[in-house]
Image (cartoon, rainbow, N blue to C red; front, side, top):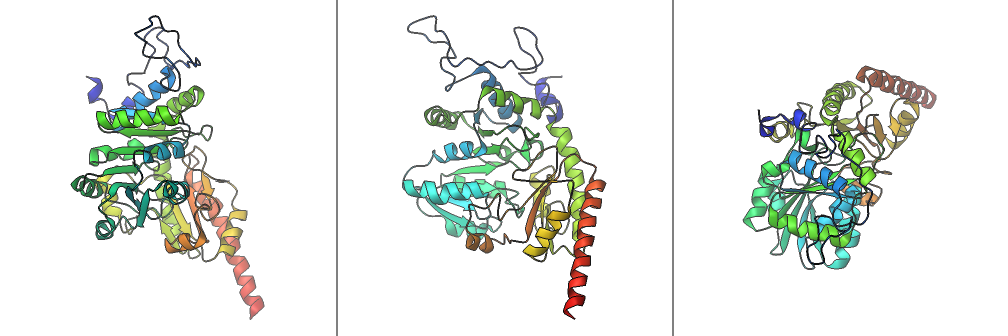
Length: 396
């Protein structure tokens, strides 16, 4: 059986870096050297200066490229470093069409940084292909897709957008943070660049900040490699090793968390104090069919709305298990408040346009028993209901 015949789960462990060829070590060595001796004046070795290439970082870049089915991977100091460097593929006067309910950091980069350098943008609901077509301009050079989107879990047809981009000679970027290559491989659907905040599911333990990118052809690899070296926002070797370690358990972590997310989403959807639940694993999600055509699951992130910000605050104060924090994709469940966390960089008027309400919470489901999380949420919601009843009686 060849390596190419291995399933994804097996390739997480048995890839080209399963062991060190010199020592046989089953953990990638951490090479701290910042510079490398050259044995010839005219012919430099593969490694010369660690910003350009480092063996430990290279191992991670090789592994993520293999898992995403790309030709070359790149490791950056954060997810935003990966996204920002990818955007440097554009030039002044170019135009990008972008998912409207995109991560707040990406929104900030596009609206407050790229705009200063003459790169134009249009936000659209990418679930509506006609809206995407109408947003195209003669200078459109890229489509930026986030699917499922953050935080409303909208699902964009990657193949349709990629085909549209190819018709006009534009690039397709896909942020694959929520699903990872374990569940979705955008390059196989026609995308050109896949991006990750590897801080999240890929590393999975809330102990590293990292970003990754993978491209689908050698010419693009040379361009992005030049930018990585020029811009210099590379991932350190200790962090590269932590991501490599986290990747080994990606499949089993996601399998548990995804099943738990569906169970929790079902519970929340049936609760009278929850206004809306956004999760593409629910059969009544408007993009349920598309999600299961282009991906192998719906992931472990969901969002839900209470009836008011006041109710949200009371609910959050009552839950005990989830960490209430920025980020997602960890072994512990993380409850986040997009309005003041992931999307704080987006003005309220822009959030409201996109349906990101002050009563919205995002939940990244971890490795706890989902029944414990449901009990925890149920207690908090029950207390919220009792308090509302007392208030109503007092008003009457």
